[in-house]
Image 1 (cartoon, rainbow, N blue to C red):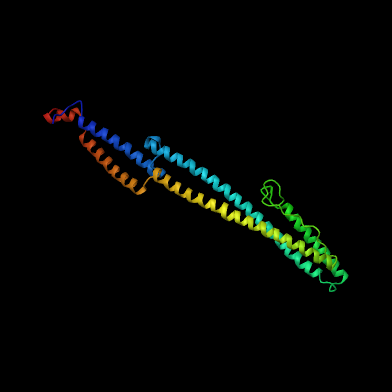
Image 2 (cartoon, rainbow, N blue to C red; image 1 turned 45 degrees about the vertical axis):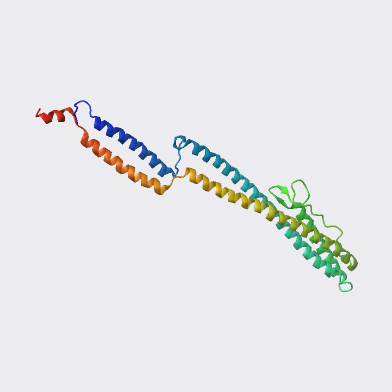
Length: 256
């Protein structure tokens, strides 16, 4: 092999190789630090496009899941309000049975039952009118409401006869609430919760697929990093030993 004073071709080749290895080393370090195989479009243009499309779908699914969860909370609030109404009717029916005890109540006791019954009726109607979620009425039949609860009227415990008649109205109100509660629960379970569960499964699958495309295999990437580090050190060592100056070449011939 010929030796040249002015050009070290072997050293230049090693320098070029070291530059390439350094670039690969930097890229691997970037992948390790970010946890991503694709950080720039140049890392995989087609894969990046597919990954971004999947991320858009994932973001949309997240919002749809959040919207559905909000709807479920609305139905749960309405169901809880209906449960409260049912408790009022249970109490009211007990009062009605007590007030219908002909000949068993004194005048003052009958009046007390009538007053107490009217208080329960007022609470019932107030709850039906005021039940809301996020500022929207739930049970008054208005736009966006989930049910239309009929106001409780005609309840009178002032006498045993009127209390007996009131029992039928209370039972009708109970039947109405049972129907509303069934509809609320059925819609929540069979539509909203089922839809959310399906979207969550789809979300998990998309996240896993996007991860396969974009995320770095840390074990494989770290192994590559170790290998590239060793190659880089070897290249630098060879460059150090191959650097021949003009004086060192002339020194081979005994020149000072």
